[in-house]
Length: 317
Length: 312
Image (cartoon, rainbow over all chains, first blue to last red; front, side, top):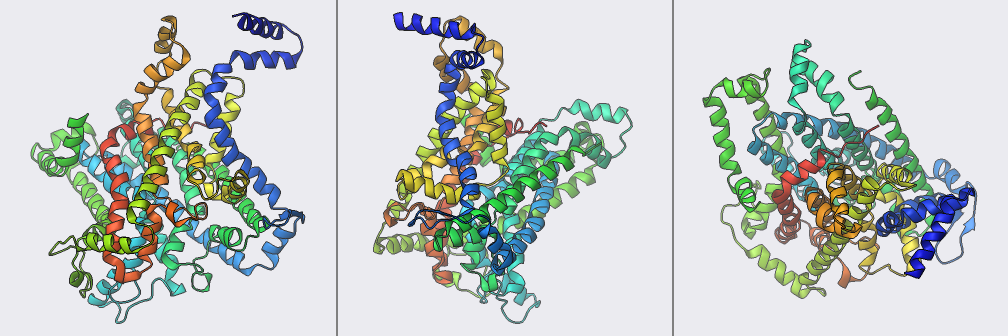
């Protein structure tokens, strides 16, 4: 009791003090319960999500193999990446191609499907949501693509195409660099209807019907006008959320290429930036170099997010 | 709640067909009432497009499910068929025998995955809800900054932090333990973000009333707030389960005895076409859990996602 009273007096003296530092302390003391609630999450979040980004940037300027003490090498890692690492350039190219092919398409497809589903009666809607969402939660089940696209004629795709007469001998989908990127894109699109898709479904479902009625009075003639002038602007928060998830997912493709083609893929035809990070980080233990790659990918993702964010603000205006 | 599950789970297919029939039969009136621009033919086109797309989505899933029950001669039939003719449990038995001969029994992989998923998910939901509660309802100095940080971290994927995390964890000596997988998942920013957005639907007046009645913060949180945000924690559960249940262990877990089930799946699948049956059986086990959870909680999850928007 006495201690409590003492603390209170102390807090009061802080509050009325003119010293800004002491005022801050009193503020923090006043919200001590809030901070206590936040603490468990915040400690883990900062330690394993925020701090790593900072250390990754710092490490990218060092040579570090975890056995010897890290050595500061300035921009050497970055210079090496862009001047003498051909595989990185290939990886960067592949990543951009995959991201452009899967990101916007997956995003648009998610919205389109959500929009079509929204027109359906309730129960039917639930069935379709489940069907479209399942592949993304079924997780590593995309490994089945390795069997569907198997290079012999037991592969389902080969067998079907042969039976229909499109090809007369099995295609090596998973080994021939000509076809590998198509398989990746198809597979990634298959799992791309994730949390963003759910957000779209939910956003459309919860939309107030009054807006549509008002818009009809204001002279909106068809569904396309309705979509552009009413639905999309109202959906902006969900669209932004979906965009963020879509961008981060499409730039970090790596599991799919690893499970379908192994490592390394033929002629690095499906090698992505994240594959490259893992190669240098976990196989060669050149952690400084791997951190430099991570940092570049980090900047690409953040930059892309900012750009898309700006673009989305213009929707419906 | 249970009734709901059964209804949406079992009857949905039948009801779906009924509904289409119904909407056609009861004429355009019903449809026009919902929306004034959609004609009957529009609805039919809509349904056809969705049905075709969902067939494409379903083929790989159906392939896994059917393969798991195909006898050997059907697995190697040419041309391969999607649907099984004479279902058998041979593959499941095969899987059991492959696993018995292997150094680590499949039950151990299963236990690892269940343990990682359960512990990580429970702690994630609890910690994220606590943090979200104070961020939304008792914003303290620095709350805005903290939430801005959370949103920024949503903009890059966890692969960015893999390398430094590996270093941090080896310094903490938790590499090759369950913690290496569980702990980072507890602090996943997506969960906090979704929970905080959903907390805004909890009316302040209820919280104030409880406080006037003399309830402490902990009591308010556990007996009032948590029950009210149940849809949100179901959503956090599904996302957390999705991540942890599919986690292959990577290099964070090296001991064979601690490796999770998806890792075993990968190993079996690398056996190629010869293991197609057993692999599909594992695949079935892997995919059935998250899908069931989603099937059961779909409505609540959709309710939560409605608040998921990112305001400028």
